[in-house]
Image 1: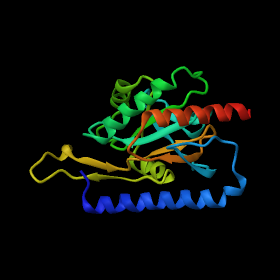
Image 2 (image 1 turned 90 degrees about the vertical axis):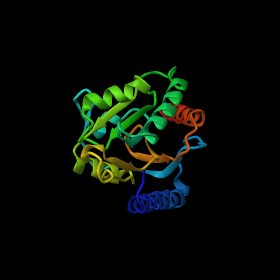
Image 3 (image 1 turned 180 degrees about the horizontal axis):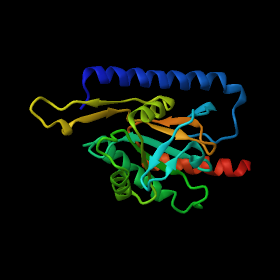
Image 4 (image 1 turned 135 degrees about the horizontal axis):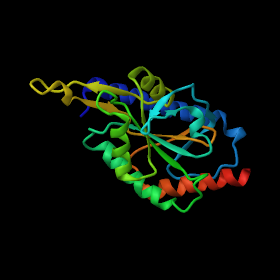
Length: 217
């Protein structure tokens, strides 16, 4: 699925993300919050404010930074024609979502699927796709420039891969980062989760983080 150029880009992006995490982890050690220890969610200290962005949700309404406040959110880039990574990730997240379903809706963690293939993925299509895995999964997309800016703010990348010679032009693929970004209840970039994903561990971390923030209020 990945060509050599894209693999290089993805490796560079991953290295940058890990470097950012290491630097923030080190320099923020003296000012750690009271957030609980996590197993698979790698938290940044301090969390990073995201630049302004506007995505389009599956119901046609805008998704802006303010819409993500009040909840811990896991953000995943993908596309509906993805043969493996996307459906596997959304299926794993559905298992995690079932484990935190008992939490109050007002603070319950959320999963946001962002399609980076707006040429084929309409809002209706991404909504149907995401909700087939779990009804609470949010889905959004945008035009390519907006998606590139949003992905960059999360230290993620994606790239369109042309189809092999002789294959229809609309049968292309999209390479994309496989990790998930973690946004805190202020809508800031607070951490990452890297594959392979463990639904039980992710659910435990997100439940603990939600409880930790609630206890601070």
